[in-house]
Image 1 (cartoon, one colour):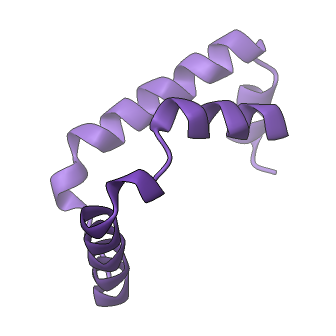
Image 2 (cartoon, rainbow, N blue to C red; image 1 turned 45 degrees about the vertical axis):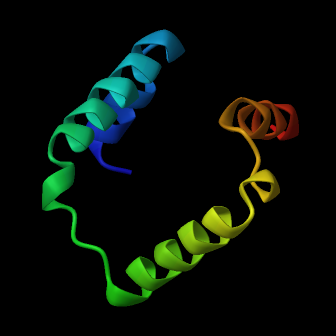
Length: 72
């Protein structure tokens, strides 16, 4: 483990969560620079097509989020 990581792990959880949020926000701002592999693009297109064909087959984000949290 690097000394930087050890230092970050010593921060209170609330500060570490804020750092993760800030880091994620910075990634989202640069999202146009993210390059997907062709197989990733194909998979996303396939999933979008399936959702277009049957919108009721998907799970709303709030329900999916609750399931994820409950599984932790």
